[in-house]
Length: 280
Image 1 (cartoon, rainbow, N blue to C red):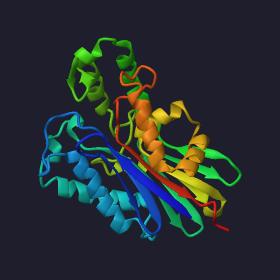
Image 2 (image 1 turned 90 degrees about the horizontal axis):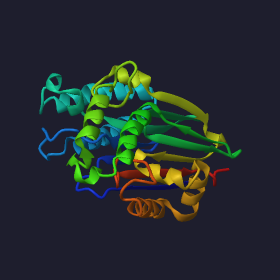
Image 3 (image 1 turned 45 degrees about the horizontal axis):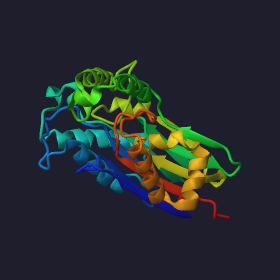
């Protein structure tokens, strides 16, 4: 079995994270804070969140006597208690709350379990060559509204007010955050225990799977060049680090985001590649 992984950021703090356990793998994509407020000692609550979840899953994911959803629900309760030492959660507006997309794979006997909450992705290629992607499209649709605003405003660079966004774009982002973990909106890992039930859970026969890729939404620009099946082959040939270098080159050549629609010029990008092809 071949395993490759890498996470990359151009910022001071990486708000993506990955983890590998004896039975599982996961990536977590922290949602950018839409406020200047911070409460944890190191000053970056999103980074603190994803690191907390990595430590928690490292210690709990391999216990297959509990379902993935049960593990995550207990995690949300513990996370809320620990983060609640720094701030009263009930005092936070929707855009001030912490949230993150999460994708998990776990080997459970002869079954490969997958779970996705948010716009992160798990790509699965079978030994028959069939490729499927497990993800939630709800948040992608909301982001598309902002991306469209960015594309139509040819003077936006002079209007930026916060984290690379104009006031108009920020208003839409904040409005959309109010749809987090509510009916008719989108569901994501955050402070809501109930949101875990809205995650996408699928199982695969482990011996029928050839390759898997867990990825955060920072790899979106690669979709403009590769089908997912071709991307898996590219990673097989060149490795995840080379693919992320290619990603950064694509972003740099389209700094104004005219050709490749995305919210950020350079988003955090994380990949875990699992190749079962050498198994008998």
